[in-house]
Length: 78
Image (cartoon, rainbow, N blue to C red; front, top):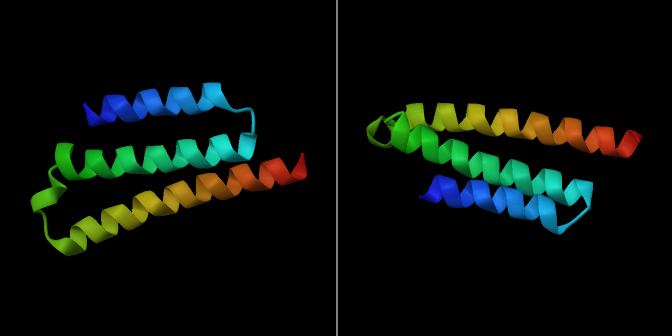
């Protein structure tokens, strides 16, 4: 249910505002929350050692950070 609610929130944010930077940031933040939830619950990392949870979460945050950086640079250049 949480993933469905987050997906609906993503669609609602896109429909509410036309500010591209705000939309990109909000969508990426929701995607990070959904990704963390999938990692912990569906991939079974909730019971894994803290090191593994930290490494996989760091990888997810790196991907989100790179996506945000590309989006920001693109918006600044246009």
